[in-house]
Length: 175
Ligand SMILES: [Zn+2]
Image (cartoon, rainbow, N blue to C red; front, side, top):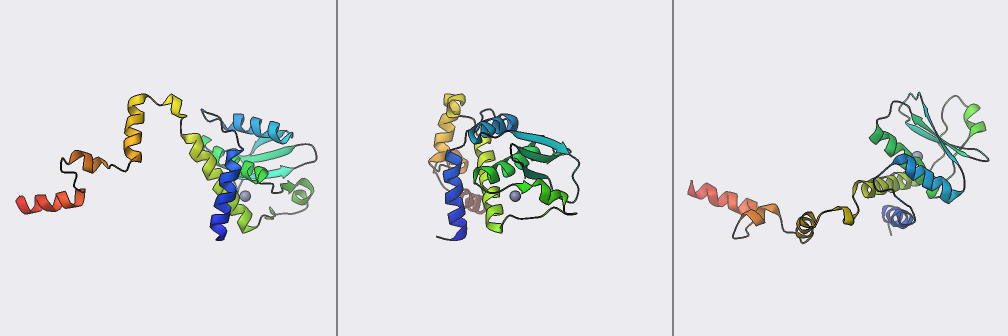
């Protein structure tokens, strides 16, 4: 199994244990996560420069999640999910002492851990964007089922069921 496949499998499994609020709310998600981990998560919007948009600081009794105060709601969700993914995957947060002792932010995650956090964050946001099936009306569900069967809009519009490319060529010959 390649590294990427391994990470994807690990993240898909981790995703199943997570409760993703529907409708999505980053705050509700963190509240659930804090409950599940039995540790408070405190979000601190803060001025951030240098391309870093979030940081998880792990203290003895609580986790602090520093988020760029200028982040848009979508970006904030991404940062929250990325740091939450580090937590859920069992990685370690930054120690406060380690941060105050250094001028720059230490980067102690391996590239594999970073990739895993990013993959799980993307999976969470992907699932968060999908409404639960019960909230989708029947007629929309029928369209979704059609799409799932691989019937394209092009082949629906063409009574002979031909592909769009073939139809275009046919037009060129007849005009
Ligand atoms: Zn990270």
